[in-house]
Image (cartoon, rainbow, N blue to C red; front, top):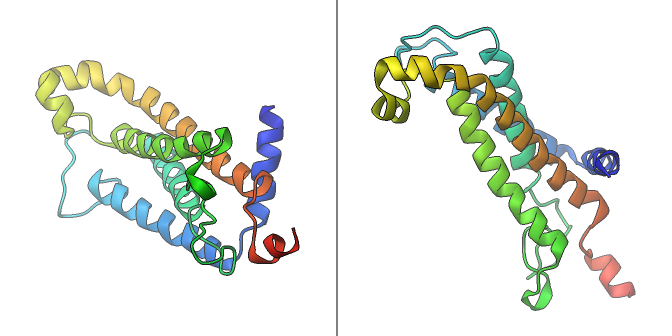
Length: 186
């Protein structure tokens, strides 16, 4: 089943046009810059980091940005893919407002992506610069308890983002909505 989902996701990715690829590249770059500046993985004068980054921060940061770019681009409508009043977005309701189980499961991809993105941000950030951890645990507690959890947060982040991307891409291949040409033939 997982192999079939990966196969369908790959086929969905092959259906992307230049527009979606461009959006994926632009949003991945934008995500990388935003996360990189805020977590000081990109050195800058606006933010400071008390604890230097560890080696795994960089691959997680780049992977998070790439997956976010792909996920956001999966929501871009291809030109001519939907007629007026209809959406090619698998997260939208079918005609008449009924939502099938496929659409309901794809509606979760936004939640998975949002949670995955936030966890990725917390995973690569400075453990004592995180105001939530600092307020809840204090400086020593953030170093003692939150910092060791960051690799786990990174792994969960990548898994959630990957699951969201697979769900979106699989839906673009295996369950395409009717285009104006197909709907007039039936």
